[in-house]
Each structure stands twice: as structure tokens, then as C-alpha cells.
Length: 377
Image 1: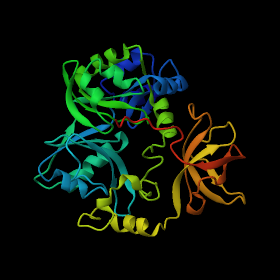
Image 2 (image 1 turned 45 degrees about the vertical axis):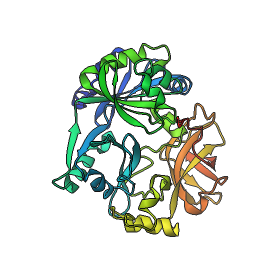
Image 3 (image 1 turned 180 degrees about the horizontal axis):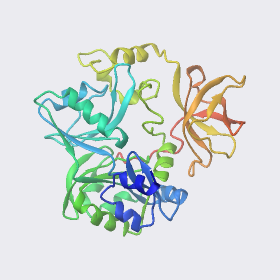
């Protein structure tokens, strides 16, 4: 198959033609033809997002609605997360688990009052829909949303920019979500995102997505940002990428995601457990008995250490593997995420990454590597 034919088989977001018009370099990602970078270049896109505001097309993500009085209870039976007590107008990070305690996908769940609004990863979209379908009772209905795009406006100037189109966004706090009109179009807006910066994710009807994107990027503070900078931005802020830092063989305990499991699901009470793999995950929480842990690594040389690099201790024993890595434009040094042997997952521990036959020293450091700047009021 030629590359041209391969690209024709890829799905396209409603903004595909606009990305091409803007000079984006398009690449296959999760079955879609997606912009990896624009003429500005990955590093400048990254720095611009940290300094001002960047606009990301994340329409490849899956958007779902769950309807029914028991929707929260049913979804809670599939995730080790508190969904039942999620207040209206708020959203929460969650993850589907399998019977072995592994993570099937990570997702965002929002309570919009009369229904739950769920956003799942593009590469796991079909799997997640099948998983939900297999577990939903007759009184809970799932609606797959295919007529809405998803934009992310991220950076310290994001609130100032979006407030020009809808002033009420300035009053939202991190993880708030609500329906509102933006430029006369009903959108679902959350104050959240995947860069560690303040910002918003905007679900907008397909036929209004291009007009909104053009208006936002016409603002002086806003530039288009591609997948390349999205990856380096999230990594600097310690955010996992599913399929790389998380997968079906990794439990939330190994992934250092205990902050994402609320107390009501993991300590004494009637809602403890009850999700796939609960016995394994709760036992790991209680005993802290896992063989490996996700950690942050900072390079002691200037060479970036990328995904797949093997890690060794001072005695040349293999002790782990890098799952994500970048040059760290704002951190000012190479940063990586990795899984290492639990006894070495201690701040300050020195390990060695094998890159092109050389062993490069790295140090276990606390994440995030640069401060997260979510707006909490």
C-alpha cells in the first residue's frame, strides 16, 4: 500500500482541512491523520503554550454520554474512582481496570446534572465503547457523540482569551464543567487540559468547530499546537500517556496513581472495591508490595532519553525501562518517565540509561518537573 493510500484510510477530524491550510505536518495517530507540528516548530509551540496560549485539536478523542438514574453507580462499578458523589458541574479523572488490576484506559468523567459526559482516549475508543456496552443495564443508555469536535485552549493567557467570547469562563475553577454559549454556539466547557497549564477543553458542534478555531487563533496570544508539543508539555508536568506510561499490565499502584482513587473506594465502607481487579489493587495498596513503580528521571547530560531506553543500576543490573522522554524545553534538562524496581524508586537514586551503547546517568526526581498551574481560585 502506498503512503497516499494509507493516508486515505485514516480518519479525519472536522478541522483537518484547516490544519493543512495552516501548514501542519500531518502524521497517523490513533487511526487519525493528525497535526504533529506547525511551521512554528515543536519547541517554539511548547514554549508558546507555557508563555501565552496554544490551541489543540483533540477531536480524535471519544465523547460519550451516559443517561439514566443509575449511570453513576454503574460507571463506578467499572472504575476504582468515586463517581456517585461527583458533584454536578464537576469532572474527575478515572481509569477502567481489568480483572488483573491493569489499566484499560484513563478517562475524564463529568457530571452535567441530567447525564454523565465521558471523554476517552482515541486509541481505546472502540474498546471502551464495547466495554461499557457489555456492562450497562437496560436502564442506563450510552450515547456515542460523533457530531462534536473537541478543542483545548491551554496556557496562562487561555482564560483571558476565552473570556472575550464568554466572560463566565473566568469564574470557573480547575475541573469545573458546564454548558455555555461561546460566540452564540452551545458548547460543553471544562477548565482542564493535558499540559499542566491553566486552560479549557471545549466540546463544540462539528459544523461550528472551524469558525471557533479561526476566531481563537486570530487572537494575538494564540498559536496552533500539534501532537509533538502536546507530548512534551504533558510529560514535563508529570501527566501519563496511555499506551506508553499506562497499559493493561500496569496497576494504578505501580503507576503511582493512588491520588486518583478516592478514600471511599479504598478504605473501610460499603463502596470499597466492587470494580474489576479490586482484590489485587486493594492488596497492593495495603501491603505496598509491588515490584516496580513509575518515577520521574532527570538526565545529568544534555542527551534526551526516549521511550524504550533500558535502565541499569551501578552494578549494571537491568532495573527498568523508560516509557516517555523529552528534552524538557522549560525544565532546561532532559526529563523522562520510567518504571524501575521498587527499591530504587526513591528520590535521589542514580540510574543509568542505555542510549546508543552508552550508559547515561539519570536521577530519580519528584514529578512534575515544572510546576502545574491549574486555576483553583
